Length: 95
Image 1 (spheres, rainbow, N blue to C red):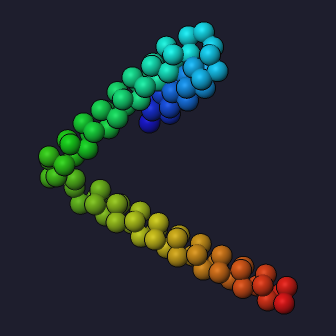
Image 2: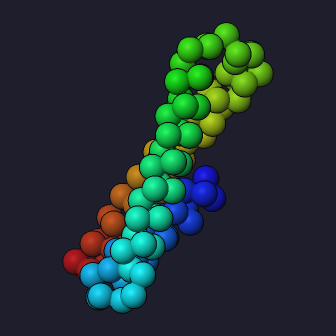
């Protein structure tokens, strides 16, 4: 995760320096592109490994994933409802 973050930072920095014509801007851009591609290859390797061996997940991990999905859904529902309540309150106060 940190590898991809720094590679994207390097990629954008290289793109800006290359577009402004700084010395070594093209090399920094190429380095950022290569490291970002490497990070994507590592991510794709992990995805293929997880898809190939689906029995590696035990019951505890599956329960944890379901709890996290439920928390995410509840959070989105509450956030949406809170925004609607605030929106209704503001418009009723203005009218």
